[in-house]
Amino acid sequence: MVKSRNSKNGFMFKLKSILLNNKYSDILQIYLDKNGFIINDMDKFKNQVLKENYRHTNFNSFRRSLNLYGFSSKKYNKGKILYINPNFNINSEQLPRIQIRQVEIQDFKSELIRDYNILYEIRESQKNIMQQIKQLIEAQNLLYQKFQRQYLAYLKERIFQRIRFRKLERFCFCFYFNIQDQKYKKIIERSLVIVAKTLSQSTESQMILDAYKLYQQQESQQQFTFFLDRNFLSNGNSKVQSNSPGEFDLNQSFSAFSNYLDI
Image (tube, rainbow, N blue to C red; front, side, top):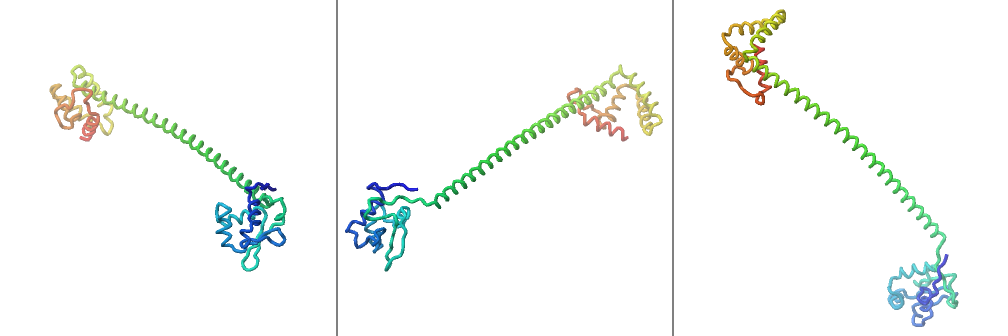
């Protein structure tokens, strides 16, 4: 396909005016078949012709423009360069148009197809990435919900454990002070008798009977309390460690009870 360049500012119009200008006759000359021209002196062509007629002195740019309009170069005598174009005639008013080769069209189509394929691959890659991000977000939400359920279950279990330990603390504390109360003395005595009879055949019966005999040997409630403080709760210390439920030490109670059983 072609594009007309017949205006006075066009490349071919300016080239024709340069070739017809006698000022450059020693630098340029029209080819005998009048379908091209010969550059006799390349240095003068660059430094004079190009400098006076074009915005630049780059010969490669000038050569690319010639190729665009269908000119081809050939080596000529003694270092001269010949440019010819079958569609060019110095005496004709019809100037050559820009030539677009079929190969260039095919290359352009190939580049478009290649660019389209690249864009399509990028788009598909973006879709895959977005899908992976969505899956990661869903997995993260599931993991967070699972962690939240486990954490709530852990807190619930810890609260229940604390409640059970608090009840056990209160029971031990109340039991300790109740056995020192005179009104529970007879109940405790009867309970000890029942326990002693029930466990008389067990391996621990001797320990229970010894404790019961020792209790019967006490002359007063004060001596019995002192015995419990020393052997059951205080682990040898005669002074009671606490007078209020809030200050009762559960670990100390279990330790004293274990020491008592080891006697």
